[in-house]
Length: 108
Image (tube, rainbow, N blue to C red):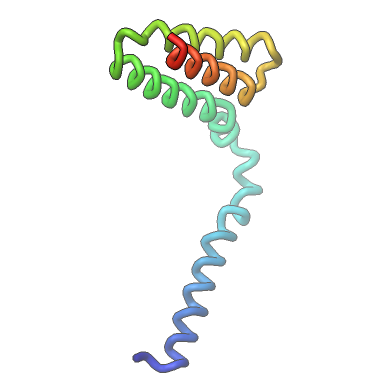
């Protein structure tokens, strides 16, 4: 078994590396806030990620059972309508669309 000073040194080094890796993003955050590239990423990345998520989920649901494709379409329309007409609140529109889809699948 390794001796105590070796173990203490290993723990201290691992702690310093962890601290450095966690502090590094905050240290470089200030200059990046003014970057046009980072600002563009901040505007477009959330929509891009949601688009990828929606396309994967819809494709999987439609491919899984083609007879339920209309249910996916109805739930998607409800989600979009809720989002556009009830204040663009993402959680509300996602919950409404999910509830609609679950009800359609289980009741029909």
